[in-house]
Length: 73
Image 1 (cartoon, rainbow, N blue to C red):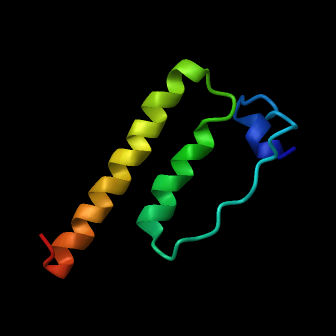
Image 2 (cartoon, rainbow, N blue to C red):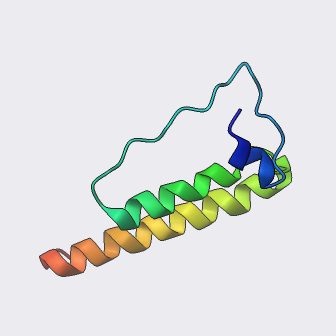
């Protein structure tokens, strides 16, 4: 188990569902947004929706910025 993960007060994740590293997307903004999902393990299920909505919102904002930069409506 990752000591840093435990040091943050998180419980050990379900051994049936091992944590896997998320590959880099090549865009640091997207990587930072997706990293927000790492808060899910050890968080009460009732808080999951808020975390998922936050990550989703950040990804939508990034897509909007990309569309603006490319001139796509």
